[in-house]
Every structure is written in structure tokens, then in C-alpha cells.
Image (cartoon, rainbow, N blue to C red; front, side, top):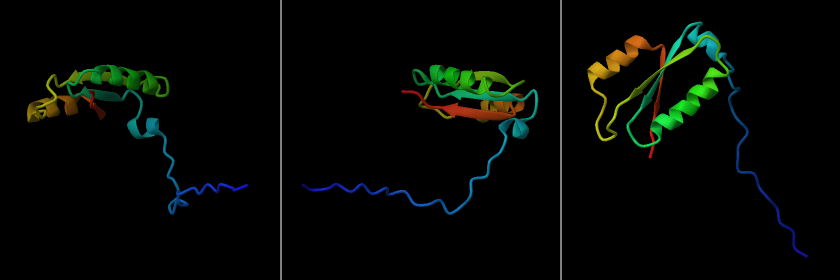
Length: 95
């Protein structure tokens, strides 16, 4: 009878994880921008992100924005408009 030995390739972490509280980083009343790139389902994915974050972050609101065309970059005016409304932004790519 032969035996099989499983080897875990993960190394022991060299640094201790620095735990932080996202609500402290953002503050009460923060606005999180959710920027979809225009691919199908990028809006749907960000909707689920909003549900997950919204259930954990009290007092946070969300601003949705869809670039509409995944093949072009957001221009400076679009980026500035989003940055002026939001304390943090999450970008998403769909397929």
C-alpha cells in the first residue's frame, strides 16, 4: 500500500496583518462611488458590492456611475465629477 503526502505550498506570512476599521477610515456619512466600466453585468456586480458593504457600514451612501463603453477611458471631467461626489470609489469590470 502506498501513501500520499500532501504538501501545503503556502509560506508562513512574514508580516503581521494590520487590521483596520473601514468605517473609521471613511467616517460617518461617507459616499462610496461605484464605477462600472460598461461591460455587461458590471452594474449587477456593483449592486452586489453595495448590498455587501451597505450591510456592514452604517451611514454610508452609494453613487452609481457607468462609463457606458468599456473600450474608452474615463475622461478627466468624468473622473473629477466622480471624485468630487465621493470619498472612495470602487471600479468594476464585467464581461
